[in-house]
Amino acid sequence: MAITITHNAPASGPLTIMRALGDLNPSTDRLGGARIDISAPLGLYRLGLDDIDSEHSFGHALFVGWRYLLEGGGHGVGAADVVPSEGGQARFTSLARNEQADFLLRAAHVAEEIASGLSGDCEARILIVPSLYVSALWLTADPPVFIPFLDPLRPIRTVEDVAVRPDFTRDLLARAKVARDRRPEREIGMPSP
Image 1 (cartoon, one colour):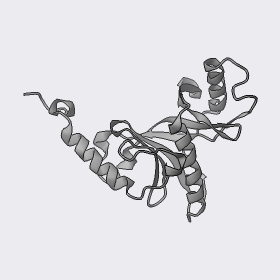
Image 2 (cartoon, rainbow, N blue to C red; image 1 turned 120 degrees about the horizontal axis):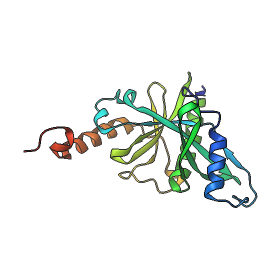
Image 3 (spheres, helix red, strand yellow; image 1 turned 90 degrees about the vertical axis):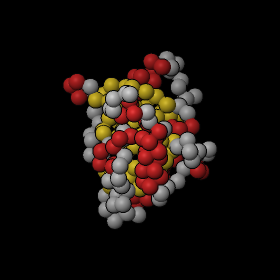
């Protein structure tokens, strides 16, 4: 039906990003004269390895900030992250201008198409799992929908490769178990021999 946002980003987010872009590239002509369009913010959620233990693990994902998609001149320019700071203002943390940003932009378009066919509202989030080097656009529908845009075991080589993965949850659970089983004991809080 519709994509909603539950964590309201600071109103200063887009201005913070434009200032950061100016600092990173002081040229007034960032895109050959094209205007930069900044998307609505997507909530950024991090899921730790030890939190991946069931198909309900996504409820353990921690909200860590917002990611804005940047477009200009009819194509993707990148993605910028902001986090809340004291006083509710946005603080710029990173800018990605690479294939992953292009893949995320494609995932967002796929998510819009899917959401329009759902019977209820859902939220579009970005899920990052640093320990497994996996990132996906996550629609909080029932059941949840995942559109990976970074996955080293199932490489995404072109924007056409970005698609819904119905087996994402099952695959993530299996990978997390393997990663935990391979971890040295001292890393999981057990005393060393």
